[in-house]
Image 1 (spheres, rainbow, N blue to C red):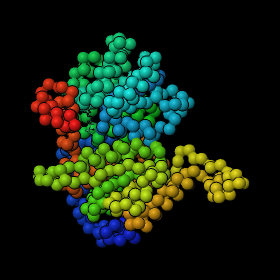
Image 2: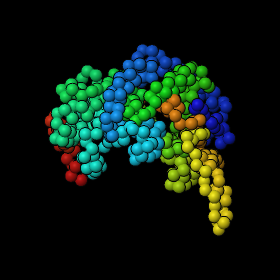
Image 3: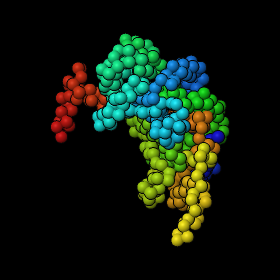
Image 4: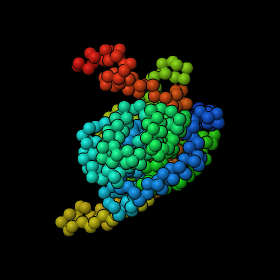
Length: 458
Ligand code: PA5
């Protein structure tokens, strides 16, 4: 179960905390946007909200996962942004740390690799390793359009390798495409080559698509219980659709974030105290940044808003960031992720007689140390009037992760409405994409190439 702690941290004063009166005011301000979002859902404007109820997607995903089962040792995702971060986050959260390296922990399932970049050194190293295992490797290319330069470049490279080494048959059988069901470059290539394929749902942007075939296939192939994941999202839906602010964790989360942003806390730090949850903050970082960082309000007026999401990991970043977090500018809101019960715990070894100062550690549970460090950091931050929230996981399983994902998706939608912006577009990403086309000599971008040339010379 997920719940919040310290949301009303009014021990830290009016400016840096929220007292009961302000909390009531926030409730009054947020109630109308909860019903606005519910209406948007009814009129089909937020299609991601209904993904957990779609019965076709998990069935289709399981069908393909079943066809691949036992045949492949490696499953490789080619995608970027919303077509990769959810896959990475699910894998880190729900499979063991040594999954890729330990056959026993993999229990007959393939290793997972996600390539979300066009770094030649990285891909070359992989191609070198996979060369003699190519017939045991399947590639899931995920791209709504197929025109995203990074994914297209990776795909074209893999296509060449597959055709060269395994011929037409290998190419056809060892690529699964997740793309638009009707149109786009990747749909054309898929139909032409005869790949198995899954759909990127209409009206669901990349960063909102993890609970669709985009995120579900790699999860299912790697043994993650996608039914529980979706069930978790549905159970969170029961809580986040209520118009009772005080019972709606997404509304509280959005309102608290919005409030602190308006009080000058422009940075939102997510700090899991769990390695399993570390890539969830990467997923959240994209969701938050692309959805809420906007220069125009809904009427097209200049607004320039958006909290800057920052990921940190406890305890690692205590030894890297906490000095700044406590003594630097008081411009951050902290969201901790805490786990009450770890799947595997460790009893710390006893201390040698020559080091009695380590006696407090000997025989203690490692989870106790980790969670004590979380509480200690939170305490230290609160002492310096830095507001903190905690999302508590009783344990990390597919159900809780489904709840978490849905909670933060709906939080983002509600925050978008509170900020008065469109949370579903990303117009500012386009210019950079077009400039890349121009620099790569794509037809139709000559004028832009001329405009860029002074920058390129520098
Ligand atoms: O969230 C988004 O919309 C983006 O991050 C996209 O997922 C990303 O740009 C990839 O797009 P596409 O699926 O068209 O290749």
